[in-house]
Image (cartoon, rainbow over all chains, first blue to last red; front, side, top):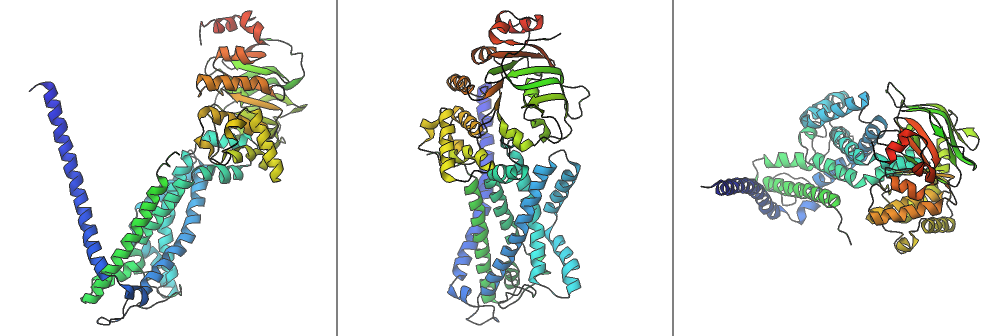
Length: 281
Length: 261
């Protein structure tokens, strides 16, 4: 075998191996998705959106309470988490910079928080909010989700702002702009697609959280919009229904899993579409 | 000793025993520079890399203040005052002394909003006045024809040369007294370079220009006065045609004949 033939052969082997690994990964993903879609679509009907939880055996049972509870939890934690994350990220990049000791300590802490198991954050919120107040509540759930969301958005904002070339800042200063206008009108604007992607990914991440909700917002089988009371979420409802022995509850669990996955998938796809370079006219 | 000629014209700017030290540096990067800059003329700064041309240029609009710990010494006189004092208003100073950077710095907004940016900072809100002054600035920067039908388009869709002229339009829209150019053509192709050079020569009727360039031919083409800098010193300042033909200093002669640099 000549040297060239050997190289061609090795090239083919490596390519075959990487294609095979990709196929295995893709295979599992498609398997999961197809089981989810088959069972999910089978379980979905109008009743799900109309009725609240009911004992097993009742025709009129649905997920209305969990859907509304989930939307409430996610939207309020987004309203709290996004401004905190963006403002803190802006501080790190624009006022702290890469050399500042304080900024780097904050970066390290936020990295640690990002990789902390979410159940730990749930137990923290249980200790500081649920236990002293004496009951599970929507606010406790929102606190846990916001704590998980902030470091994700903070780091993306920080990273995206640092990608904005410093000459762009200097050019705005050179026209006589004060610092807050440089940040608001030039730097943040230049990084807005990246920051928006970070926000979407942060929202998608907390949308799938179950562990921190189990002992903060807990659960409610009926519709509740009072955030000072326990409140249903899709994830906890799915966990309860899926682990129950009743077939109609298990079906509702599939429906919850399907709706949740589609929601998160949509957020992720949106994030990609926004970041993708725009086609030139 | 340096050879600095007497500038007969009125002076737009003048440094006196100017020194500059970067944050944490043991030695000043610019030493004892006394340099007059003539009004409504183009003054070029040449010299090998690291000689302090850009550092000096960025002192005139106090760009160094954006980073903590930098230190000025001596005086820079502008309109009869020393602009290195504590009480100098950076915002006002930078509207009077504009700057064009090495790479085009179009803001992530429309062409119109780019040029209107400095005007809005000055507090101009009237739509007709804004539109008029944007048009005038684009015309003065010789880019009106290419942009008049796409004022609402994103400025980052333009070519590098167009963006650089847009930046010039943005800088002249606020009607500064002085424009500082920091190697404005080093990121551009020859044809765009030619366009910018022509523009610089036209602009000197209205503003005084200081340009840093790596390209000695460019200095010879566009400038009335040329300063040669070496290792943080201003070695020689003279009329451009004299400095390039009969330099007074041996170092200048060695540099322009290509013996080092």
